[in-house]
Amino acid sequence: MKTAVIYYSFEGNSTAVASLLAERFKADIFPVELKDAKKRKGFAKYAWGGSMVFMHRTPPVKPLAINIDAYDLIILGCPVWAASPAPPLVSFLKGTKITGKKVALYCCHAGGKGGAMEKLKALIPGNTIAGEIDFHNPGSIDKNTLSAQLDEWIKTIKL
Image (cartoon, rainbow, N blue to C red):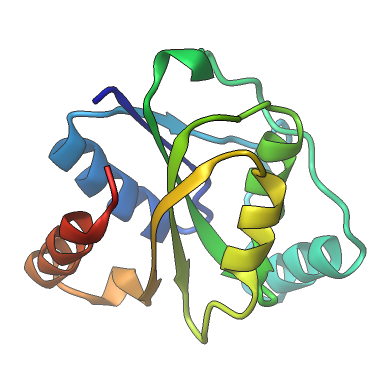
């Protein structure tokens, strides 16, 4: 089954999960990147990200060199910002037609997934959700524990 892992990561947590998933599935990996790559830190990152969520704004992202039709399984991942999926992944999904695919979802958070999964699902109608999982502070989990959590989740994905 040809698999693509498409993700956005702000601080590296979603990247860590995406890398492990790509390894397990022998998948192609596609990071969603902002056109404005200015790195925000401290309070500025919360103000920037939170304002995007609350004002329903999506930032411009760089185009991905991906042919969605070439994949059977699409794995989407991102951090949770203000109980929502990170706006850069939302930007990608709003600009990319994904239909008729099996899709697995993951998110990373420090305080709860909120409605992030339901909002992601609403952005990809016409697909079969093969599985979903959320990770609480994956950057603070040792790699072996994170790998074990992923392996357990992978067993539940409906391929």
